[in-house]
Amino acid sequence: MTARRDVPDGRYAYDGLDRLLHEKARLGILTSLAAQADGLLFADLKTLCHLTDGNLSRHLTVLQEAGLVAIHKGYRGRRPQTLCRLTDSGRKRYLDYIAVLESVLADAVEAAKASRKHRRVLPEGFSPA
Amino acid sequence: MTARRDVPDGRYAYDGLDRLLHEKARLGILTSLAAQADGLLFADLKTLCHLTDGNLSRHLTVLQEAGLVAIHKGYRGRRPQTLCRLTDSGRKRYLDYIAVLESVLADAVEAAKASRKHRRVLPEGFSPA
DNA sequence: GCATATGCTTTGCGTCCGAAAGTAGACGGC
DNA sequence: GCCGTCTACTTTCGGACGCAAAGCATATGC
Image (cartoon, rainbow over all chains, first blue to last red; front, side):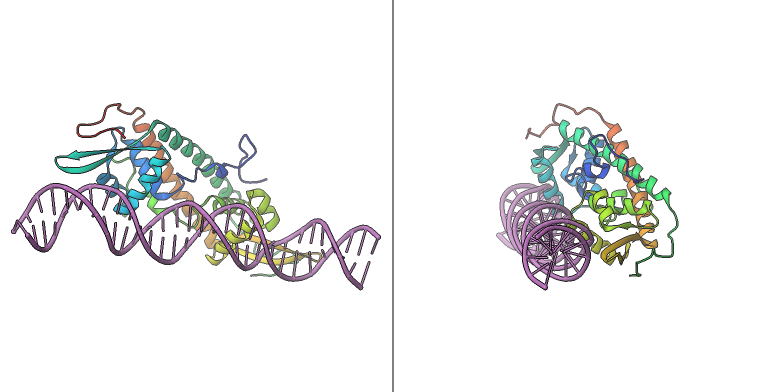
């Protein structure tokens, strides 16, 4: 009947989407970091994710405070350099998010298939617009 | 090298996520509507999506103004009733979003597979925390 | 030693979500 | 035929947040 599949506790898949991760920029950051176990430099992340300095900084702070990424301050020569890594709990949360996203997507695809054409007529008692 | 696949124009998949749709509540609304060509009543949507009246109203207005859904005011007997339907362009945009989401998810899964273990040691020049 | 570049952080603003309050008419009791 | 409650939404409000621009501190080039 409904296009969304029920998940164990009776809620729907998209309800479980982690707000912290369900954000373009942060999802990009985490995807980049997930692929690089050794971490990525601030500057690399910036170009990889097409983010401005300020933006990346802000998101990294958020992610760090939530415990998803670890920030290491260091130097290359005399210039400061920031290394970012996914923490173990960050990786777990990322994987959880992906799992939920898979369900959401499955629901969405199913719903999209369910009906391809609109009825042109309105039911009785309804007026257009 | 990067975990994200490049899309035709050189941008990354998640860059293309439609902000309007990349929102739990709205995604739920559209998924519900996509599955019901005849539309859904306000009250049905409310319970289906676990939204409050105010919330649903707000999101529907947004979606209507963006042209994704059509709102029809009618009556059942003497009580007002609102019917919501996906418009054709709404359906298209929904399908586009799903397509992007599929790429994003594929990237994410790939990234997650890429490295399962963190190195415990920091590179030279970096200090923990 | 002054301008410019690097490597971020902080501030400010506009937007947006969600909860709570508000509105308007229908229905029921009495 | 008034009053409280219910249905069916809409509007307002507060707080969060994303992004851009400005700020800051050090390093390097000329």
